[in-house]
Every structure is written in structure tokens, then in C-alpha cells.
Length: 225
Image 1: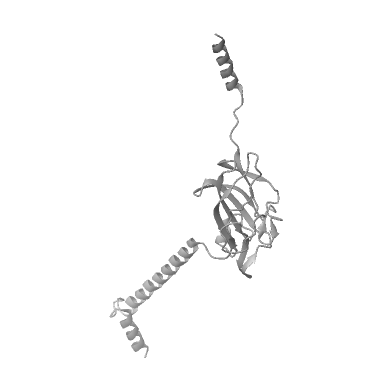
Image 2: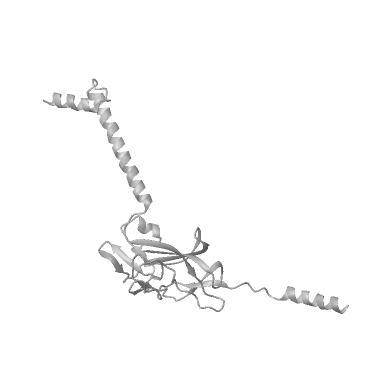
């Protein structure tokens, strides 16, 4: 009887006690501990500007827009925060020498990653007044992004800075979609003019039939004389 009573009390206490969730990984948004000054560094790296008046390898020395995305896998990243020039939240984010740091000095939880675990991080950066990276990719602005794994803190460990970050180079290379659209536009332009020229040939020089443009060129040249 005493054993059953003790078991009942234990079960009652277990049901009433609050469940404590395991600590989640924590990061801070800065690269202040990074010192690798190579623009091809794969970790512990800095931010660089290139193009639009900046020489290749110029270390970040001015405020730019930033975005932070985190997740448990490379293909499943969630946006956490933007720091923007157009609303003042990016003021003071660049601290010189290719370094940046969240002006609010907040820490950010990585859902699904236990404290001390490895998280996937994406850092986006761009110049100009656009609100999103895509705004810079389709305008005259510098932009860049890097995706990498980074340790986390939490669970008694201090929040981790972005020591796993490779070199982030902001340049003015259009995104692939921009090249594709330009190619399609050029092809459409050439096709339109080719059809127009053939239409003129059929109307003005029926003996050409509009199918032999070289012959039409000879006829046109002969008639112009």
C-alpha cells in the first residue's frame, strides 16, 4: 500500500512540474573575432567591397544593409532580422577593417539546434536603399551573400559570433536571372527585326519571295543604281 501511495505521489508531482525545454543554440551577429584578411578565406573572414569605385579587396569601411538567416539545414533557412540604411537600423553596423556588429548587441536563437550545436547561417549584405537583397541584385548596387556552418552558444555558453563565416565580397555582378532576361530580350529583338525585314522583302520584291535575303540584297542594290 505504501509503495502504491509513493508511486501515485511521484506521478502527481511529475505531472505538475513544468517541463523544461532543452536550451537552444544562440549566436550574435558580428564577425569581430575574425582576422583572416584574404578575400578568398573560407572561415574567420571579413567583408570586402569591389566595384563601383572600390578597388578589389577593399575592406568594409561604411555602413551597408545586412540580413541574417538561420536554420538547421542549408536548404531550410529562416529570416531572423534585417539591418537597413533606409530606417536607420544599420547605423553603426560597420566598425571598420572589414568587421561588422549588430548595433543592438542582441543574441539570436537558432530553433532546432541545441546549445553548442552547429547551425547553418546565411549573411546577406548590400549597398543602397533597397529593403531586400533582390533590390540590389536588380539595380546599380554592390551585393553579396555567404552560407556556412557556425557553432552556437547557449546552455551556459556565451552566444557565438560568426567565426565560421567565409569572405563576404560585395560586388556588382548581376544575378543569373538578369543575364537570362537580357539574353531573351536580345533574341526577341533580333527575331522581330528579322521577321520585319522579310516582310518588307515580300512586299517590295516579290521575285525574292522573302526567303533569300542575299538575293534580295543584290536586287535592292541593282535597283538602287
